[in-house]
Length: 306
Image (cartoon, rainbow, N blue to C red; front, side, top):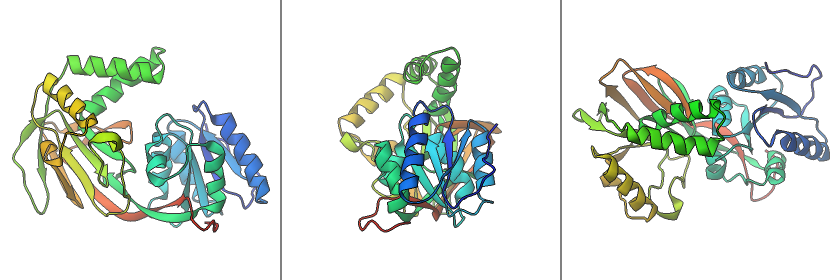
């Protein structure tokens, strides 16, 4: 369970993922650099289900800043509690991929990231939401949630994350199948179709070339969704290769932007990924954007404090 120091201070509340291999380095940098700025951080070590509970409890403390230290799953857990509140989110990228930190502009160098907590400025960014659950990066159904489930099982068997991921991709592709979906919004009502996956991004993702998987904006006020074409396993792999070579366009993935839409499925419930975490949700899935709902401490050009 997460533990809180009894002593209170004016420093930031820092929720660190206890499973991170960079936990001790993050703690050392936080204590040392906070002292340079004359404050004492309150450091909370949490894991799994304790992360959102720690974030909810931190909202009741007298701090303008709550820091999330971990990967995208940790950021998601804390951001879900802070979205729509005045409390700002600080980000320490001590996870594996750190997609959100990269897109916000947080350096992956840990010391530099800690200093931004004290020298940065609060930037309002959008969050996505599916059936009331917040996501800061993306959500989806189909192939990716299946891969995550199999990867988690491989990790429980002792494989490191990257090996587990590769094993999961191979396993899921061998049992390749489609999901039946129908998308509807105020503007459109698409016919039901089979697809390997539906991907929904909090703002538009680059889908080709060296910038693939990144976002140039986090405050457009629009979700970006794509429904992959009904195709076989080999053609899907070819499309993935073409994307890395910069040869895939939005229309090939039936991509569109919207503020809100619904995804109907052939089943009453469906596995849904949100920032790498998978949960079972009731269909239809209700996706919407919440413009500027989250304040994030990002690098500042003038060095003014947040």
